[in-house]
Structures are given as structure tokens and as C-alpha cells.
Image (cartoon, rainbow, N blue to C red):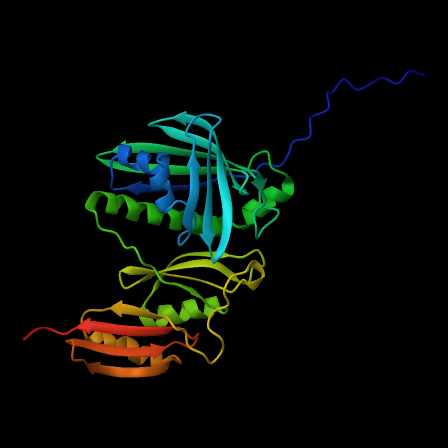
Length: 315
């Protein structure tokens, strides 16, 4: 008896696909200025990376096959990253493989999420209209393992916040490049119960949450940016396993105070009263001071000290 073989060709097993991560932002700056911020090493170092990080040791070879290799400090820990550049089609787009790295330029895993893709195909496009420039960033995890794609998909909200924070800093950088004015000092607080602190700062100061990145454990906050009275307040939970600080000890005060310049002077009383009602400890009740300002001070429930200052009208 002859068994007839099926003529139907076997379909190849297809790997699961996943939607790329996409984010875009329109900047009030010409395309040439925006491209310069992405392609000049000294400018990249001023804004690249998570909001609140500081880039150093940057090396850039902008050509296909070249790379951008850099160190950055984040939450008191030094990490490394790199681009392996695939395409330079300016003024239209840049394409590279994005990854964590090490001091020698090797490819490394995400320090807090080992299953996150080691390399992400990255495409950035630049489009100008009426003197403004739209930047579109696409992170494509195609070709990664199923576990890596799952890890990628699980933190889309954090990626939105992380890229959003970086683009916020880029917007500030572009604005300061054109005006010569920039904010150079930003407080960064470490608070073990960061989620509770965020709610506190929203209630007392009317802070606006700009972005939040969760740690791999899904419980601790790795990084958060709050809009606060025209400035920015950065904070994170405690990560002692990575050598980071733990914040003021329970019942102690930080030796550093955050000072807010307010207007009108009534804001001093309003914020102080809200802080005390929310569990803060008074250091100085609101009063008119000899330097011509309404002033108050308190320590918040997390051990961080605040000074409120508002210049009084001149008579």
C-alpha cells in the first residue's frame, strides 16, 4: 500500500509580533537647531537620558557603523548606554540600535529588568512646518525573544514617561539655546515611600505629575518628575541594593532644604497651613521678615525640609 504524501506545504512558524513604541513631540524651534541637539555630542549630553540624569564620558561617531557611547548618573548609580548607528539620512532621520552598555562599549542588559530587550531598533524622524519641528521616535522590538517582547510590552507606560521626560528636557535645552536662559538646579529627593510622597506634594503644593517610572518589582518608583511652581521636583524610591541613598532616617531632618520663591505672599500661608494639616512639622510659622519677604519653613513627613519665601510689595 502506498501512502500519498500531502502536497500542502508546511507553513513556517512565525514569531509573535508586537507593536512598536511611538512617541512624538513638536518643538518651537527650526529643524536645523533640533537636529543639532541630536547630533552634536556636547548638546546630546545636556538632555539625553532619563530626566534628572547627568551624561558624561560621551563619545560620538556620527556615521553608519559609528556609535554614541556614554555614561550617565541616575539615582546615584553610574550606568552606560550606546547607539550603534545604522543610518544617517539628515535632515530627515536617524536610525540606530539602542542598548545599555559597559565602560568598554559592550552590550549589557537593563540593570533593573534583565528580560528587557538588549537592543531596540530606533528610528527618529524630523519634520519642519512653519518654523516648528516635529520629532517622532519609534522603538521597534521586532526580532527579540518572546520573553523580551513581553517585558517590552509590560512597561509601555514607563517608556511613555521616560521618553516624555527626556523630551521635556530637550524642549528646555532648545529654549535656553535660543534665549540664553535655563534652569540649572533641580532638587532630587530620595523617599522610601515615594508614592505616598507624590500624593502629599500634589495635595500641599498643587504639584503636577509629569512622569513616573516603576521599578521591575512593580512596587517601588524608580523615577518621578513633578511640575512644581514653575520648576521641577525629581524624586525616587530607595534602592540600597544598587548603592543609592535611602533618604533621611525616620525622625530625622535632611541637612538640605528646598526653597520655593512664591507669589503672591499669601501662598506662603496657604502652603504652610496645608503642609501642617497634612502631617508636616513646623520650623517657622509664616511671618514678615526683615529682608522684605513673607517667610515660613517646615519639615515634611518624609524628613525633607522646605522654605517658603515671597517678596512683599514695596510701599
